[in-house]
Image (cartoon, rainbow, N blue to C red; front, side, top):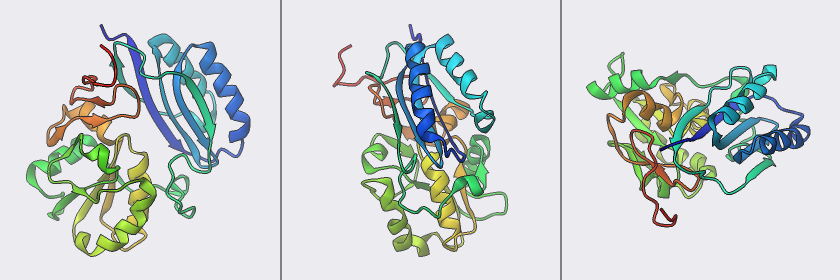
Length: 250
C-alpha cells in the first residue's frame, strides 16, 4: 500500500531572508518527521519532501502562511516507502543553476501552456494559430534516457547550466515554430523559456507543472517511458507510480 506522500514544488519569489529561513524550515520539517531537500536562494524556493500525508500537508500549510508562498502548488505522488534518507535544507546562489543572473522569473514569467492545451496541440501537431509545435527537453541526458515526449528535441545536456550555449548553437532550428520547453516539474523550463524569448524566439512557452503535472492530468498521452525523479524511487510511470529500482531492495 502506498502511504507515503511525495511532493515537489517551487516558486520564484524574492527571499532575501533565505539564510534566516534555513533554520526555521529545517526545524519544522524535522519536527514533522519529514525527509527530503529544500533549496533556498534569494530568487526563491525549490522543495522535494516525503512523509505521512498529514505531516506533509501541515508543512505546506505552514509555508503558505508566508504571503510570498501563499499560492505554492505542490505536485503530489505516492510511494510505499520513504524515498529520502535524510532531511536537508540548503541555501544556494540559485534554486536551479543557470549561471545567468539576469534571468529572473520573479520579475516576469514566460507564457505557460497547461497539460490539456499541450495534449490538444500534440494531437494535431500545431498550435491554435497553425504553427508547428516542437517540444524541447531541458533536462540532462540521463533523465531523457528514462523517458520523454514523442519527437522531443534532446541536446544531451550534461547539466542545466549548459542550456544557454546549446540554445545559441541551435536557435535557427527553432525559428518560426512554437516551442514548448519542459522538464520534470517546471523549474528548469521556466528559466529556459525566458532565455529563449530573450533570444528572438517569441513563440516559446513553458509546460506548466512540467512532466509530472502532465502525467497527472493526461495519463501520459504522447509521452513515452518513465519520468526520472531525484530520489530513491528513481523513476515514476505515467500513473506516477514508482518503478522498480535495481539499486534499492524490495
